[in-house]
Length: 465
Ligand SMILES: *Cc1c(COP(=O)(O)O)cnc(C)c1O
Image 1 (cartoon, rainbow, N blue to C red):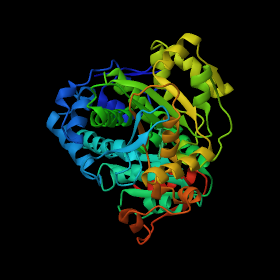
Image 2 (cartoon, rainbow, N blue to C red):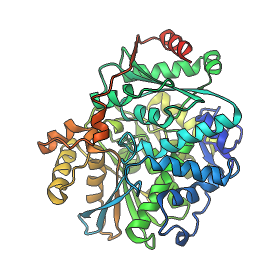
Image 3 (cartoon, rainbow, N blue to C red):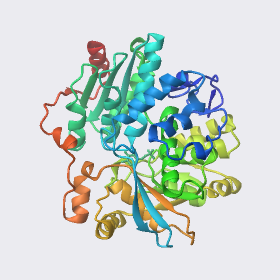
C-alpha cells in the first residue's frame, strides 16, 4: 500500500514514511491509494480483538513490516487494556424510534480515554521503525487535556523517542495534569507553559517551522492527523458490529466528534465493506459540522467552552480526508479550498457533494442542557454513568431522525471519572474513580515550567535530549 497526499503535491510514500512524517510536505494529509476490502467476516467472528485488529489493518502495512512482528506489536498494544475484550459493547436500551441502542466502551486503556486505542499501537510502531532505521525522534505536542497523557503513555520508556508535551499552566484539570506529571521516565517531559492552550499550540507550530531546529533534534508529532491513528480506529467499528449482530445486517454509529478522526475511521470501515447504514456526527455547542452537513457551508465561529472540552474545536482537520474523497480526489482543488477556508473562515461544497455526504452521514448538535439531561436519564434507566462526550453521542443517537430499526452503536470516548465536575453537576454524585486513576494523586509530580517563548522551548529540548 502506498500513501498519497490530499493536496496532491507531495511524493507518494510507504506506510512507515507516512507514519513517521505525520503531515505531508505539501501541507496535506496522507491517505492510502485505494481502500482494501475487509477479510471475509466469517474469518473475523469469534476472534479476539487483537486477532481482528491485525487482520483488518494488515493491507495498510504489509509492505513495510513482517507479519509476525506486526501481530506481536498489536497483541502487546492491547494487552495493556483493563478489559480482555479491549473495546466491550454494552446494552443501552432503545432509541426513540425503537431500534436497539448499544455503547462501545473505548476508555479501557491506560489513560481512560479513547485516544489510547490508537496511540498504544502508534507508539509501538514508531519505536519499531525508528529502531529498525537506527534513528531517534523528539515528539513535541501541545495538549488541552486528554491527548497529552495518552501520547506520553504510548512512548514511556522507549529508547528511540523523547516526548515533550506543553500544557497551559493552571488550565488543565488536576487529574489531567497529574496523569502527565507523575510519569517517571527519563524520556518523558511534561512542560507547564505560562499561557493558554493556543499559546502552547503556537509554540509547537513555531518550533516545527524553525527548519534548522526541527531537523537538528528530529522533531515529530503524533497528533490526530497521523494516518496510523485513523487506521487503528477502524478496528473497533468492525468488532462492535460483529458483537451486536454478527455484522450480518447493517448497524449505525453515533460518534462524539471533534477533529473528525474517530468518525472518519467509521467511514473507512464502510468503504472496506462493513455494513454501516448511518454515521451520526454528534457535536456539542461547537456545531460547525452540524451546519456544514446540513447546508454545505462551513463557517468558523468563536470556540464555546463546554462540558465536553475534547470537542471544543472549530477546525476539524480530518475532514480534509473526507472532502478529498467526495470531491473526486482532486488535490489541487482541496489545496485551494482549504487555503481559502483558513484565510476567510468560510467555504462551501456544491449540492451534489452535499448529497453524496448525506448518503452516509447525519449530523446533530447537542446542547449543554441536553448533555446533563442525558447523563441523568441514562443513569436513571441503566444505572450507568456516562461522561459528557459520550452523552453527546448517546443523545444524538436517541434522537436520530427517521424510523429505522437498524441497531445503533454510540461510541463512549472517556471514562466518567475523567470529567467528575460535569458528571456531578448533572447527577449530584461524583463518579467512582478507578484505582489506577486515583493513584496519580499519591505520586510525586515532575514538571518543568517555562515562559511562553520559543527560545525557552528550544533551550529546554536541547538541554534534555
Ligand atoms: C479526542 C476526543 C474526542 C473527539 O474525537 P475526534 O477524533 O477528534 O473527533 C471525543 N471524546 C473524547 C473524550 C476525546 O478525547
